[in-house]
Length: 223
Image 1: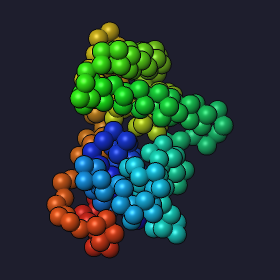
Image 2: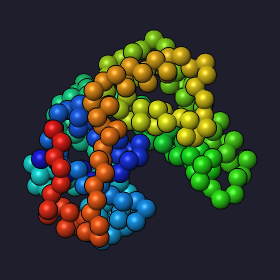
Image 3: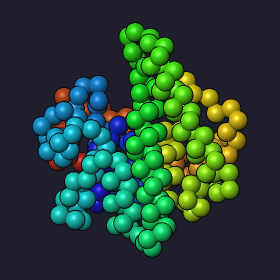
Image 4: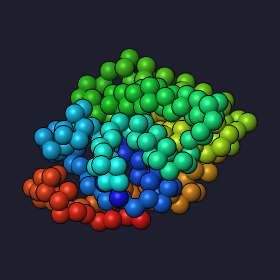
């Protein structure tokens, strides 16, 4: 059994999508970011960095795993799916996974902040991060021109990138002229696991219950 501590963010969706693709049973523990539950001591015991998502694998000595990319690799290796074992294929998937972790995530994340949330609209910052996000999308589009998925075969690299690119409008970035990227977005959305994964976590009212209390009580299991 896998415990998933998550919230409704692109990084959270990566893990719930993969769990659905793998058809692994898991418990969902919603983390209220606005209430800063991710900074509570019981959560920091699982992830010292105080960020979602986190999983706990009860089949592996209750091992906690944090950082969304590391979780994707862990689950892919655990099940032997969506990450090739041979060196060349594995390297290709890891390159595109790191492309998301080091590029799309940070750049688009900053575009979200300055375009949507910053109390002062700083045009230089908005433009800078939107342009860089668009440039990264163009890299994806070129890669997808001759490939149905980022490395040819469906992999955790596709799962990592998709939750970010699908909300391009939230960053104020258009997909005009990126027909291969648009096709890829639609193809992945047609997969049932993607449709289910972006609905996790379901809304759960816990009041003032701590994460530790919630973990002991258990929550709705998704299979």
